[in-house]
Image (cartoon, rainbow, N blue to C red; front, top):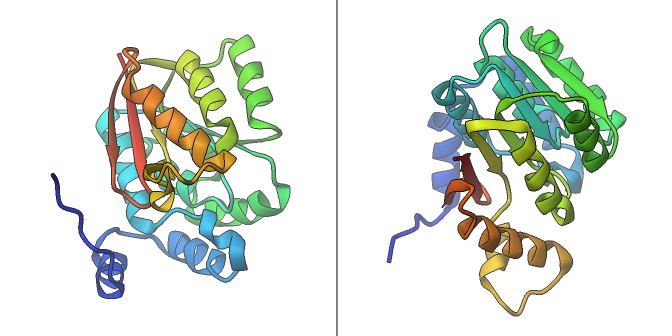
Length: 219
């Protein structure tokens, strides 16, 4: 059985110092979002942002997709990793949160790389499929957990072979491993983990990054 590093306060402080290289706009986004109360938990950690950026570069992506933008840290991390001609389509339902995101994107000089679309994610993805958009090389999904499987199936239609889909929160603070926990969000994530594990359309790995990142590479 593999070993897991215990996430002590000292280790998390260490990660915050050496786990990622941040521009001032990223630091400001992260620190200001942390002051927003309970909703701040929806923000990814800086080392996750660095991981996304590295994956974008390794895939050689120029067209990226995001479902769930919040205050913009993940889209900012991806946009910074893209070449000058690269673009990311970012989907969210909240004008309040994404108005904050636009400020950070503008500060970092990448606002023109980000195509923000407001509306229900499933409907927006269906419209993109109908319009023949894509193919995308990279996607990051971090939105309402009950729709993760719907996002997965639609993302598969929008991606090119060799493209990479990443899902956040797939360990759900460990709840997915506890069969006694059966709330809708946990059940949805547990079911999707099992589905992707057995899905021969993709290569996969579930990593203990942040709250668990599922990676699915399109075959």
